[in-house]
Amino acid sequence: MPDTSLQFDTVVSKCTEIFKKKTIDYGTAWRILRSSSLTDQIFIKANRIRTLQETGSSKVNEGIEPEFIGIVNYCVMALIQLELKKDNRLELPADEVIKLYQEKILEAKNLMMAKNHDYGEAWRDMRVSSLTDLILMKILRVKQIEDNKGKTIISEGIDANYSDMLNYSVFALIHLNN
Image (tube, rainbow, N blue to C red):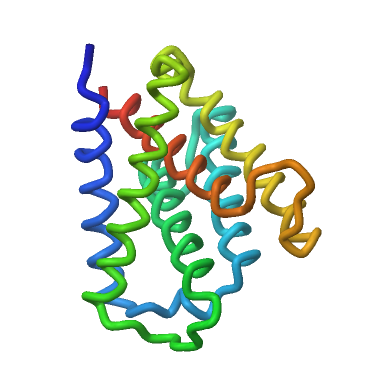
């Protein structure tokens, strides 16, 4: 049986490196984005993945893997935004934002490990296309929660949905790298 924790760390290390490099290039310009804008960015990535899966062709020289990496990183940005809701700084020091990034990744990993225990790693038998569909469904859920001003009656909140989308993207990346 493959070591899920190690596979998660391997995939996430690539996502982290890209996030760090983009932070050096762009700073934290993404801090200007509202939660709903980050949700829309995730939707764009997931929708492109689905289009590529359905058509099998791309006119832009980027495949599915970079889009899943983008979803991981946008989910982390969204989780950071939710945590720093009252912090109006647009520019965060690189070391601070990387620390926050790593905290959110660790929280997602712990959630993934707990759910893997309970679900028996069912994701290993899923298709990447199903993971894409689950991400799209979670995006629609988040949009509805956002439209309801963050209020839910019985459902998980926005943060739980971002964490699930992050983990589904990691699962897809593990599948794509095997």
